[in-house]
Length: 467
Image (cartoon, rainbow, N blue to C red; front, side, top):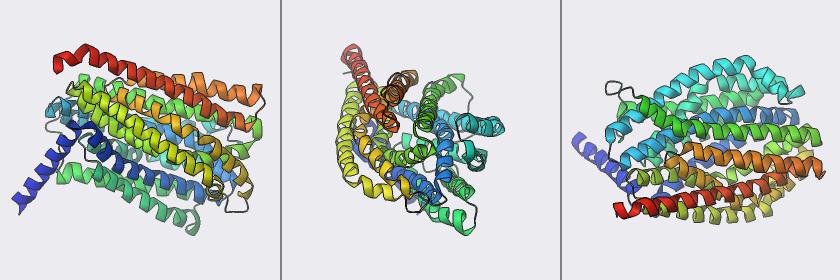
């Protein structure tokens, strides 16, 4: 019986490797669906935080808005390290170098542990000062209360992200999804219990998030270390320290993390613009509305995560035609889904807004949130161009290029246009919204053109020798 189970497990591993190195379109579709489902659930529990916290009043919701950019930096560290691991492991699989793939996975875990020890110490010491600089004002105590808990347990936030990326790099998206499903359902259930029944308030939302991430971490650790039925094998005995592997991981991981840092800094800037233009209520409305926008962006982000694995394997195998197919197919899929989501979001914007305004303390925010959501509908059509361009560059190990694209989009386009619309053209808080839509659209088109030209050069220069 054990022998039969072992054969089934080996067949499953072989099937996953065959998938990510085979037809790019089929691989993108197959890998994207579990990714999108798991990310929807993760965003659902983040959304649940906002919904339950909104019941505590607009100050609590604004406090969550001020801590969100810092929280996203931490999540970005995990996603960045995960992207670095995903890219390098997928390229190693494509090149049929299993030892390098295993060693890359071990290096990514050890880097995660080191960062999880160092960063919280620095962040927690200066948390209140940072929040005051961001303009948290009267909401700072609640923001600090939330931040101290989630940042203190950073190891679980980072590890669950990196470990799930290791599974996805070998095409094992289903179990990565199962871990996320368990996390999301647990968080949604215990959120109101911790916040209201136990009377912990905004701290309850933080404890629920941390406990859920811990469960996800232990579940994936069980599959990788105890059950050991994955292609990637984590073993300290076989581990060999390699500066080159660290360099390869960080060449994608650091720029990918920095991308989230750039976006978090932009969020801080936009929050400051909103406070100046319309007060903390504008921040509360933006915080609630942006949670919905992030859910709408899950399909292209999920497709982009799948593209890192598929395009990385194609690049490692020097199959540049497959790389081009993966990129173009992902773009078409992302735009089509974005168009549908935009239409649905526009129609149901007022109903969606009521989710965040069910209490008397936050009811006055409903019209502003609905208006924000309708403006953002245009954003969903162009954003897949930028997300998938960055994903393909990360897949090829070109993390710095992906970062440059993000900086150009966030700084040269969004922040400048948001400032002009808000203060020069006196559009108030709507100026920030239109800065995101128009600036983001321009930046995403720029990214797509850059990626398309790069892939064309690859095919032209190398394809004849690899046909």
